[in-house]
Length: 279
Image 1 (cartoon, helix red, strand yellow):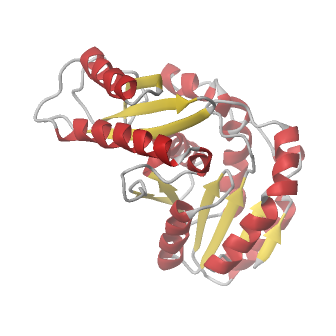
Image 2: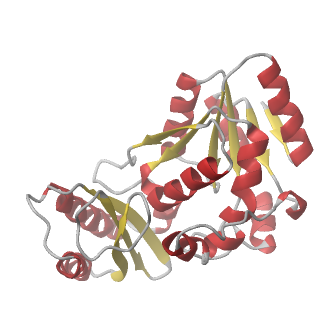
């Protein structure tokens, strides 16, 4: 497995692969790899000749928090070697970890919608905005494989692919869950068995909303979710509902939408997405 640390290395590697007429699939992950990431890799291997995994690297799992240089350094010292072995065992062809900020570059989003700007104005402004555009261009990927658990980052990466006019096919896999319905996540290791059961209960009950024969108002859905989380003795963060195509916050569900569900126990944040189709 090849390891890549600079933009020039990536450009050279992807150019070589393209000259051999091979298909490239890329996967972007934060790090601390697990079973759900393995499923993404398997799909990428099945659909391409060469699989590139881009690791951004952090040990901080707080939602909507900027990735700092210090956290990247901690990741390098604690988790990077484990993730390299994980990718090698999974049959990944190249692992890319860009530790230098000179790789980063911002993409002009002045023509983006206000809803899109809202999402990238938080944690994503310095993180996704500064890595993904150049990364997508450098990989020259024919395919990018992403997971549905990270639904609104999925919408953002689709935006970049369209804006950069890249011929990259997007494959979205369903959220990988454990036997109790809890989305597989690096954060789960910080939960006790009892907390996992309570978190699983919340996710199972929330997913049932997608099966309702009709949807009430958004506020009623949020109230229902708050009750579920309260019953499980966890702390509600958000249950906002957004358009799956524009990321506009919705007040009524008259198009495909998703609930951005975030709740926590102490400092452990759990995220899930509930996909809603208008009946």
